Image (tube, rainbow, N blue to C red; front, side, top):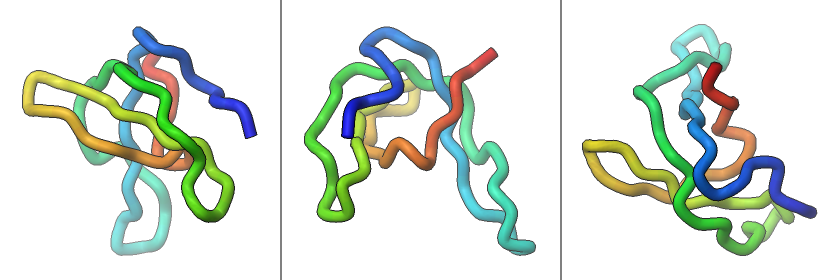
Amino acid sequence: MSHKYKIGQHVRQLGLSYAGQKSIVDGLFEVVRLTPDDRAGEPTYRIRSAGGERAVREGELVLAS
């Protein structure tokens, strides 16, 4: 699979609420690295904010507006 987001784009990370719906859990992040697909074939990324850097799956991200 190819990556949907590009280095330098701003995204927000999603999480599951107690009701099972996806909602934004954290602030604004910048994509800093495209990383290989996970075992399920989903693209992964390294994202960074003022609070630090983390690895996430593509399905956990939405483009910041």
